[in-house]
Amino acid sequence: MLHNEGRWLVERIAVVGASLAGIAAARALRQQSFAGDIIAIGAERHQPYDRPPLSKAFLTGDCSAADLSLGDDEEDLGIRWRLGTPAARLDPRNRRILLRDGAEIPVDGVIVATGARARRLPHTDGLENVHTLRTLDDAIALRADLRRAERLVVIGAGFIGAEVASSARSLGLDVTVVEALPTPLAGPLGAEMGAVCARLHGDHGVRLLTGTPVARLIGSGRAEAVELADGTRLPADVVLVGIGAQPNVEWLADSGLVISGGVVTDASCATNLPAVVATGDCAVSFSPYAGRAVRSEHWTHAFEQPATAVATLLGSESRTRASHPYFWSDQYGVRIQLAGHREEGDTVRVVEGDPEQRSFLAVYERDGQPVAVLGMNQPKLFTRWRRQLRAPDPVATTAP
Amino acid sequence: MSQPVCPLSAIPRGEAYRWETDPPVAIFHTEDGQVFAIDDTCTHQDASLADGWLEGCEVECPLHASRFDLRTGQVDAPPAKRPIRTHRVEVTDGVVHVALSDEPPNLPPGVRTTSEAQR
Image (cartoon, rainbow over all chains, first blue to last red; front, side, top):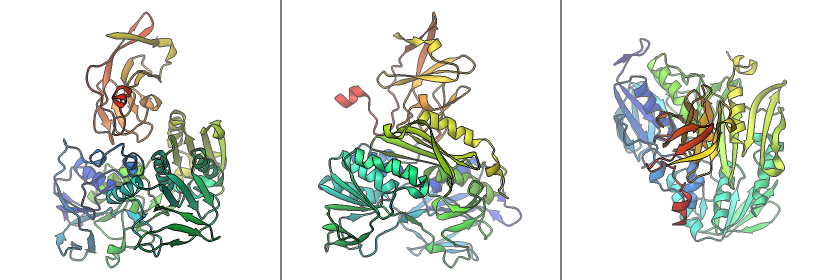
């Protein structure tokens, strides 16, 4: 039993969201000596599983659903699972969570880790061969459709779209990727490096069409073709929509939590409500690297940040220092890694290797200081640069 | 049975050497001058530990920062759950010799040894 900064005794903590951030939060609770009840609430019917392989090895059949498990047979976290029913409402005044199936769960503390869901294209709900990819069930359905398909059209050339295109190509499909922006990945990587990464599609026989948005999907019941704004029609047996994600925060609408593109928190994951913290993809947290609140959708963030949220909730001392933002993507047998925080206006230069060889390291700089590093098939060098970024620098320490 | 792999002088202190056997083995030469051999492929997902960050007797995976103890193969930091297989190393007349373990490797999902893949 713990006394949480004089607020109240925390005996029952609900972790809402049972994916990576949720299981990381449950582990952190036990590691930080919380001995009370942990109730884990998950919208999906599955035990926590790892999502990154869904667009890669799982889609190609190289790993199974069992391989994705985030649990560990040898660990007993003493969690009470409530899986298959999403949380419908947080009622902080009466210290309870209401589930969609009508159940009422009394709580003393809440860790909001409900993540994000794939954004969908409007007017495509009735089309059975149009997929998004976020969950294991999504991946099972997409995998089944790809097995009997010849032509895949991917809408959106972000990381999910590129990885699915790569996986489908390795399965022998004819693949076209369409991107509304002139350069794929310009947001995370900048236009110059986005263009470099986008060349991987052409290297491997995948058509990439940029700068023209999708006008509509043609077909009823099934999409037969994707029509672009310039009238181009792309016949498709399967369509994958990879146009980003949105946070799962609607259930918090009347909770009193400040919501602005996600649950707003400070750098320690504290929200505006006592005994409620938020972490992972659903949280907009102050980032010392960005100098503002940002919502991160990256795996490492969802893996590491919950320990901070738990320390805040329990009032424990074991706060972990935030590491640099980091993400990776595996496409066409090429490993792309980025660490640090890139902003519009940062300069970028290749310091090792050659983009033409699809093996290089590039450093982003701001005011002459390295702020981010991008590696393509350069894991060893990338790791060294990533470690150097970890050293305190003026950019990272100017945060309040 | 112990096999000669490379001269120790080929691996500067603080560096690693990837031995392309099946499955590949990473040989580390620590800053203190010790030599260790473990399976090269992280037990969590496909990444080469020889590309990782060596600190003391510990290596950090370059992909997700799992850490393994080079002496025992134990996981010091997740996300890896299963230990990495270790191999016996001897340096004789300046040459690194490795005796490959008889234990089965803990390869990550989707990664097979070449001999398995050909079966």
